[in-house]
Length: 139
Image 1 (cartoon, rainbow, N blue to C red):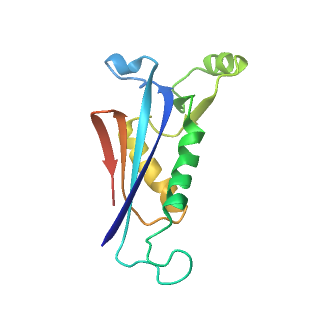
Image 2: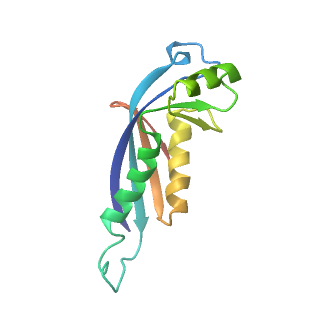
């Protein structure tokens, strides 16, 4: 089995509605996303002969996704009042609504699915919320 890894990161804010602790408050992270792909055979012809995939294709795909989240407020659908959303939008803050609680666990599965949709043979995705704490997803 062959494995490749790449990583990217983004800075964003989030909060966990209904959480009894500090994370219920708006706060930020430098999220680090590590994607690992796997396959039992390498390409046997063309420019990528002898490769699992071109590293630059893998890296660029992950960076595109991370860039979409960079410097934004990520919030769970239904977790903010309409007036709050409207006020933040009036200030032209970049906000991204997601259909899940924005935890590292959910993000690891979310990035797994997005990278899989781009055609990569994803083995595992790790999402670091801090330098020492990560959540991982693999199937």
